Length: 193
Image (cartoon, rainbow, N blue to C red; front, side, top):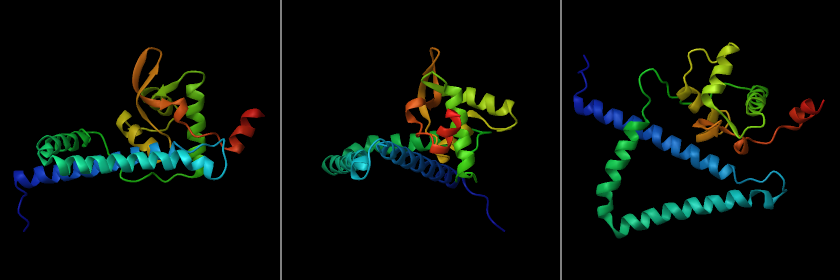
């Protein structure tokens, strides 16, 4: 017979789960930022110099934080509660689901999704996730999804999401035109035809 977890144990599990989500999100954002440094218009080493520079910036930042904490350990009295608060806030609300792994997709499905996002963006700077979700649901996809679900699924599929994308004087979570990867040669040929 298993004993019911105590209030402190439930709180610790909540904090642990929130920290896992927070660390995964931070790592995903850092990795996406480093990947965004790649230049598709260049070849060889020159194409990845942006990625290398961004990785050096992240490493220097982490080293700077380590030095700061080592020099002034009392800063942890502020940093730890802030970290715990952010971890608890990272936990999805009731009814929202947190994706733990990328949904099964093929490269063709990913290219189709990117083409859909590009079509919805058109000549605007981006598209809000609410608009994308509405379009998907009107076409029989994404049933039961929320904006939070879409916000976690898109980066797993290689579609970067920004917290603030301005479209028609409104700012919300969305996909910005500048963050999209270049279309594949096959997609470019289809558009040209």
